[in-house]
Image 1 (cartoon, rainbow, N blue to C red):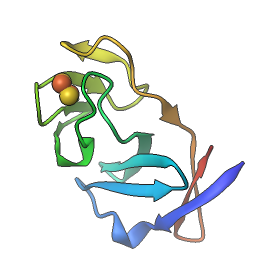
Image 2: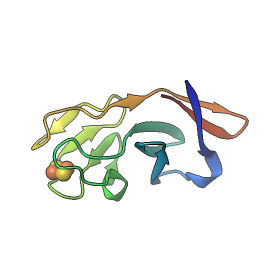
Image 3: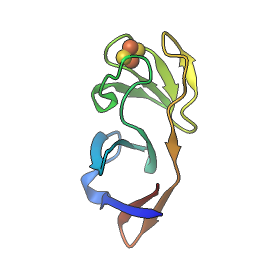
Image 4: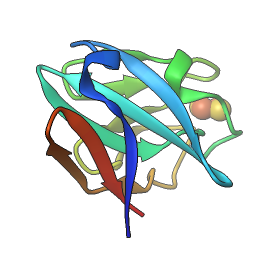
Length: 100
Ligand code: FES
């Protein structure tokens, strides 16, 4: 099911933002003009990943510095060991949609 997340202009390049879609918290990232969407909470202890930092494809958690690959949610460095769930993204008419 596709859900509309936001107008792409609200997610400028380099930006990390959190969105609530029903019960889910989604992290949206604009990395080099490409949009990535992942679960918004760290799998280690639930930190809000929109407050993390991004370097290239590497997202660092703000609490205990686990690192995740934003292209597939895989763990690059612990203490987290469970990957983040990635969501397929579509861009249409300047809007970002994700497949829930
Ligand atoms: S909450 Fe993210 S590394 Fe601990």
